[in-house]
Image 1 (spheres, one colour):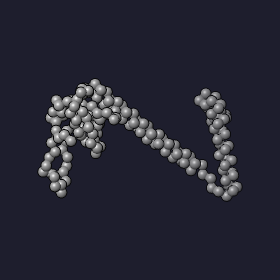
Image 2 (cartoon, rainbow, N blue to C red):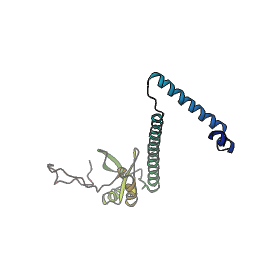
Image 3 (cartoon, helix red, strand yellow):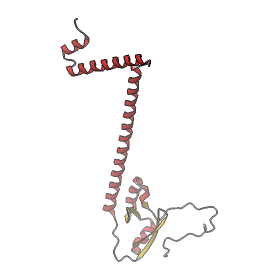
Image 4 (cartoon, rainbow, N blue to C red):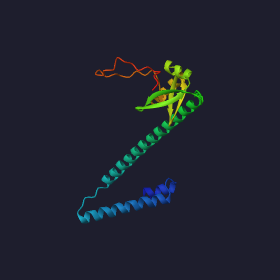
Length: 183
């Protein structure tokens, strides 16, 4: 067997000339760094450098994985919102323009007003309809559809039969506010 391992690998075609030159160049650089470090009195440990490089590579891979998980979560959330928006558009109960009954409800600790018909008001009180908040608009949808939406995004569905926890010190706890109260 004549020649070095590198020559043998080149002959059988396992390594090309570029890779061989690159590995020789790396070896020369490492030898030069070692000599300079020895002359200056420092300790030069090539293994420490490779360990640092491996650690930085692992850190980069972990950051990339975390970023990919975050992107996937964002895409999933956007897809979920789009699905819910489509369901709401398909199943919205039309409110006539001449609706004269104002229905007040709470959303994000604010009182909102929606003009509906008296029949729709009865259905809301009985729990047959629910209110869905999509952006700045509000829509009425059937209760079964509201359950599907509520399982996906519970924050956007408003029901009239929600039970609120009452304070023990509340002096008006015995007085319930009727659902059909007009302000």
